[in-house]
Image 1 (cartoon, one colour):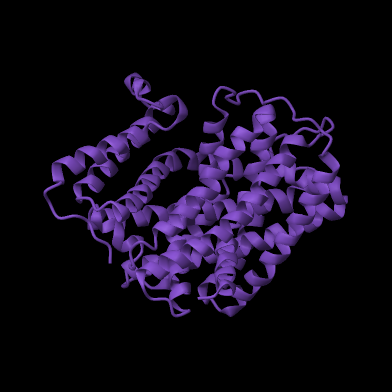
Image 2 (image 1 turned 60 degrees about the vertical axis):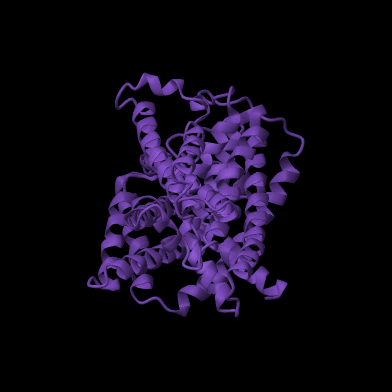
Length: 437
């Protein structure tokens, strides 16, 4: 496979990750972090860019992708975990976020007052379009995506260049109240969870593998090499855009304007667009983001419906489209802030499990290990993540968990993973080692 094909697949992967909803997080983090921006954005890039890169690559370790490789833990775990992943990037969080992001960036800036009625009407129109496109997916959706992504990218790049020129002499603002200045890296790292890209990578990896196979690549080693090339291209583009948008949020001068009830990231992007290009900038950004969110939501509805149809073939693809569209419509009417807040505890559970699975896939690929050395750390990380979320949200007082190493940095699952692997390896070292086909 030549480098041209690597670029094409890299841009395809970039387009899948480059959902308009993800653009709201870097400027918000930049604005809140103040003088601690660089440590915060490095943490964000690791989870928002680095982990998706690693996640896609790890999916190519087994020719059957994650659906096969995760059976090392247990066949039931492979199914349940993939179901959770698809629901998270689908109707429960990511799809509703596309609608609410489109609403806040396309409609709110041009209305004196908004409320649940305007959001309801907007979301009905939004999901009606998504439903029509998803119910009978055709090349029209693909063509819209191929046209829209470059346009959105060019617009964002133009906005970034103009904003950097405007704010280059500005100093960073003061850290926001509530921003943890003692652990800016950890704040950025966990903020990167909200992009959902690391868990989306688990679902997207199969698309990348199939695209590479369609070009005639068949051996496991070549699949891995070509996946690394394509993923690196996508990661480079995402990293540049995220850091640039974070820097702009860090240096923007709002001139006394208040965010009010709008999401901070959407407010900052709209403000910067208007500040850079006048009202035309806000209109252009709003229209493009709305269409981008529609195509992103359509792609996710199609992907999730096809997956569930593959594991439950007695229920038709069309019925899954109806169900997931309706669920997304209902949840979107919580509003963007509520959608994000609701997703946080779930993502704090899912992310450590996903990162553990990816890390162990890499480790057992290079260091042949018994199944127990994979099973035990995954089980321990699941328990640790659930208990940590329960304690951090005040649902139950588990004060002892704060004594765990790295708890203050939200990395308490890492020592658990390492200890679990070592114990599992020692106990199962005489058993058959894991091999990937």
